[in-house]
Image (cartoon, rainbow, N blue to C red; front, side, top):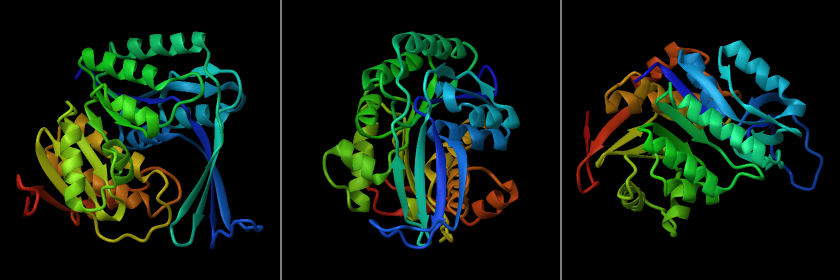
Length: 322
């Protein structure tokens, strides 16, 4: 590794307005008990967690001129290097309604439109950063003006330069990005079902689809399953983790926190079992809070001791405690 740095790419960041409430009643006036507004987007969330863990983090992507101040303040506060390309307009606002049950309803508004000059500026920045960084996290959706083909090209180019790309997206962006064989991908069971073209509604079907995805040339396939834990296929070996039951406050950002944990583990060159138990603990604690971030690393380490990690046998049917 050239340095201890990570670059996170958020092509379509958002200001996340999160409101806590009792039960959402569609078509009626709903009262919000508490709310907050935070800079977000999957790559921004990953950057925040990594910075709080102690990583050297650089962020890039496209940021709207009109409402960039909360992002700039966050990056300055956490010592994150800001290499976002500013574009005209406002970054989107996402409204997340968190019910007492933990159910989350997302209202995602449209964001900025990226022109050709901004696309070229971003590409120049990305490949300049590739000269001094080896880990890249590309996460989230695409704004207008950025196509899945652009995304595929950037992942493929970074891979050709020997970079490790952690990739987490959905829909057409996910499908096209997977074709570029990033180093690590993190679909949830629903996203993996979309890729496989069939519903994956049991453990074995998830393992089979994950193995098929890995066979396309992806070294690490991580399947996030919420309270059911994490499945990880790494270079042909399957590992499974199971967190204890947590009191769920909000699941917002839990997947991003998992990616950050795996990235931190790679930076530290941990063994697979340690990497998975740490990332699972970090993600499990994320659901007990509203905001994305690491409030207490000692809590993470304590919970890590309660995480069950198994290496699965070749037939996937039984596990051996490690």
